[in-house]
Length: 174
Ligand code: NI
Image (cartoon, protein in one colour):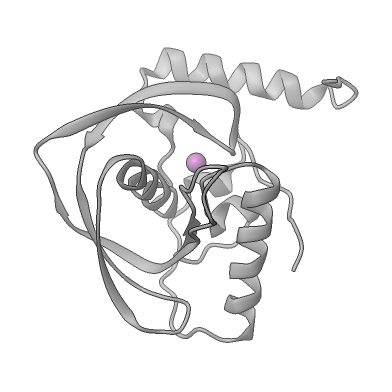
């Protein structure tokens, strides 16, 4: 397994809809390992396959804190089956949108059906950070990003800012 480069805006692939996974073979297993490796190296709590350039409906999450044991979860072909009326607000970042945080209100609780890495059908009720994280990642599978919650003006501003950062690869942070 190896950490991959994370694709950032304005790459058009991030707007594409990912395809359902038909079977979990050796390629999918390698992809899952790469996703975890890439997510942990980047200090993220979730990563969708499209963010490393693979349009498959696979995502990984781990919302454990530093002091806790890792709690890796793989969700293949996830479908949200229920959303609460209650909402919560988190300041969300995204590994595909550097240096950007946006307050987003989402349903507080969600129920999600998915296939795990062994091919078993699972059902998970999530609350709090896990709920927000899974909704954020499922949005990725449908080509939707956190900046899509903003006005066009603000969205264009952020994309321009990030494009400028990308044009200066010599810039370093120490
Ligand atoms: Ni993201």
